Amino acid sequence: MAGHDIPEPADRKRKRLADAASADLRAAEEARPQPCDPAFRHGVVVGFDGSTSSERALAYAIGMARRSGSGLIIVHVANRLPTTVWAGCEPPVFVDVPDHRTEVLGLELACADYLAEVPWILVERGGDICHELEEVGREYSADAIVVGSTHGIMGRIFGSVAGRLAKRAQRPVVVIP
Image 1 (tube, rainbow, N blue to C red):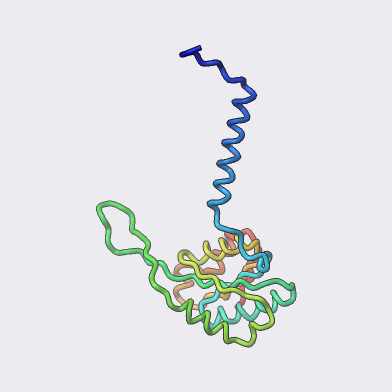
Image 2 (tube, rainbow, N blue to C red; image 1 turned 180 degrees about the vertical axis):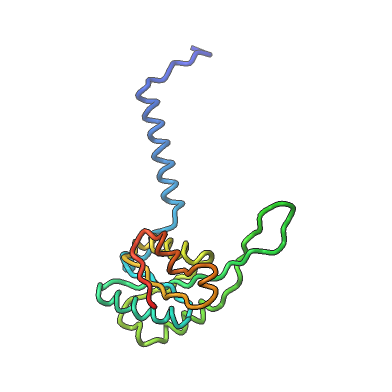
């Protein structure tokens, strides 16, 4: 019958909608970042920037990872600074500052004898330190996040990373003095 549509049964229509929904779900799963190395799942995340307090935190995290038989995820967060140029009435834009310290820290860690006892990786991130440490902890399903305490005027003015992280983290935070 030319020009006349035969209505589609409701069951077939529901099946097509379900197939489309499952295809959308598969596409979303493929677009997500690939899962982290399973050897480091449920590991210990430690914030490290080469400072004395972060070295103490690293030493504690190494012992913690060794005792639990898990991997160590060392995180270096590069600085992000707001630009000083305001275009019209738009908010400032954050710019990633090139930070070659991660490469230097990675080389120093690779040569360190004290890291030979545990499997470890170095992860570089850019942005807010608290947010990035918690995000890495979530990605790796970390058992704990270890950070060093902040000593100095900047920590007193802006609040320490350890204090802010302990307030918002979804996993245990160990603060090393």
